[in-house]
Image (cartoon, rainbow, N blue to C red):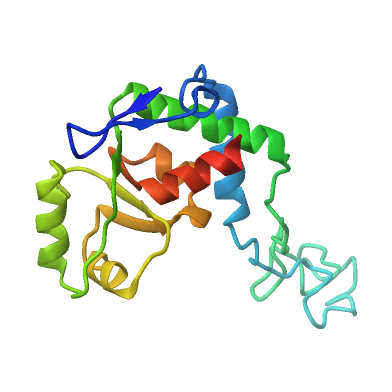
Length: 205
């Protein structure tokens, strides 16, 4: 399968088993949810009535005071009492085996190719860490990073590109080993270096 390239005269061949598969929305959704879930900290912690200090003695006797009966001052109904349904640290991670993950990535890449959202370039990099240089370079590739979400996938991310992109809200720069389904799905344009594309292609075949 031929992939879109920056230079019209050149062509890059992509493996059909990676860039020409049928789109599987349910599998892609599962991969995206699993990725986002794994990113959650799950560190929130609250104290239930059993975890709050004190409250071992009954505040007053059961009958005869005219007040409502109470067994502990740490009841959720009381000020400084425990929380009714207290949150505790937990893991939100969902299991997604490697075969399913690779299949989801192939499905996403194939859909990007069909939608003309994936572009291949020879190399991308410059020595000076200036945002204007990055904006001009993307503009030369026909990408407007002011209105389009752009993902740059490089074989290795150098400091110049990383620093230049830091001030651009809609531009994300990743090395090929950090490519993930969420970044691919939410991007209007995905620009791959040839070396990065071949590395990813090799990992998914």
